[in-house]
Image 1: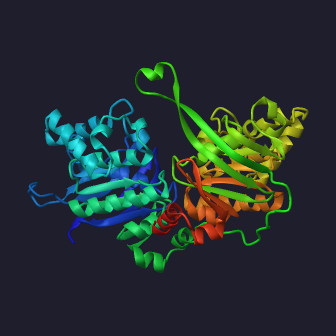
Image 2 (image 1 turned 180 degrees about the vertical axis):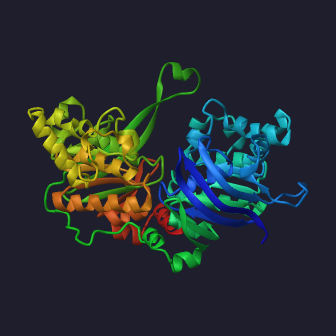
Amino acid sequence: MSKLLDVQDLHVAFGGKEVVHGISFELAAGEKLALVGESGSGKTVTALSLLRLLPDADVSGRALFAPGEGQGGGQPRDLLGLSERQLRGVRGKDVAMIFQEPMTALNPLFPVGDQIAEVLELHEAMSSAAAHEAAVQLLAETGIPDPKRRAMAFPHQLSGGQRQRAMIAMALACKPRLLLADEPTTALDVTLRVQILDLLDALAARHGMSVLIITHDLNLVKRFADRVAVMENGHIVEQGRVAEVFGAPQHAYTRKLIDSRPTRDPAEVAPRTAEAPVLKAQGLRVIYPVPLPGIRGWFSKGRFVAVQGADLQVRPGETLGIVGESGSGKSTLALAVLGLLPHEGALQVDGQGWSGGSANRALRRFVQVVFQDPFSSLSPRMTIEEIVGEGLTVHDSTLVEAQRRERVVQALAEVGLGESQFPGLLARYPHEFSGGQRQRIAIARALIVQPQLLVLDEPTSALDVTIQKQVLALLQRLQRERGLSYLLITHDVEVIRAMAHRVMVMKDGAVLEAGEVDRVLDAPQDPYTRKLVAAALDV
């Protein structure tokens, strides 16, 4: 195959500090190359530097891009040596990019059809009407149902999978020869990941397009890519055919990544099933009012049943996993358990009726939560001492400052954070820590009031595989030592298999299947459960 992109001795620095150290790699026409590594390894910076989308960066080296049909000359162009005006003709037309989070990459003020049409008007000199018609066709090609109507929708009116498809439609509008895909499936459910990968695979084959995919998802790499380059701290430490690198990794870092799958705690203590449940729900329903169309909406509201009569219980020391796609109702169920949503049906915590609010303040310390994204769940204006110790001001208000600080230090030490590693730890702010460290701070905040039940809402989905394994190991150790119970909300079947004792499968607000984790995942009875398990094995 002919060479499409040849990156030679690429260096990227910010403020004199180099973050990419002279890497080199090639990409053939029609080939799919995965750039793999943890956050901070330099893989996204590498991709962005190829299109010079890092305005404050000092970039050197060469990125030779082969000419296309009709471009004449036959000599590759150095993307790093082009003027800004020349690059504007390359971006979106010859080289396109799919960004990690479509909600922030898409303009919230314009319908997605207009945003796709803008690319066609700019690069293909189409009329407005022709560009909008082509945008609808592109949306249809990516598999969005009712594309004409969806083209008129704003980004917030689309689901996560539909927004990602709209981003793909925009990237493919001008039939680029190279697609840079930055974590295109990280925020998606496992079934949607399979759909997006199949879509990219089919479109790449149809258009003869090369793909440079940036990811930390090794299952995705095995399923999608032809070759892989492994990055650590700004260096490419290993590259080659996917089967060869994964089958016989030569570098210790590659072996570390491959060995970072979630695993069950070998010292796991069995749940205390003879004791009364710490959480029990019967016929739990959550209903949202929704506006009705037309004049009826002036006088009354409709009803959307987000959770349809769920029955569940969690015993001391037990983890109940709730798995399902986005929109299945699992996070709504978690919010009801936390007393943060009004609900119907019976809900008991520690044998007492539970509705949340001030009436249950004494029980509030009994149930705590760890959210999906620790950066957004930790206040950027509070120090670590204030964040972790905040619960004590409510539930142990008699403590003096020295006692409260001692409890904060103890909670942080329990999750593996101490002054020896981080001088001035208590006075620091969340932005001074990595994603995994912030999640440990969030866990310390939940533990400091000595709860018996933790609601874990996608606690590792925003983390790299190695950090994910560390956080799961920490949660397993805390459960073993403290006898904690967990209600684990996730769409990751591997995390469920590693953590849960029992599992509930939800779809469209209903519980389709429940039981012991091995029985449900190894011999699923419901077609939807079989689909989830098969999708998890497929990526």
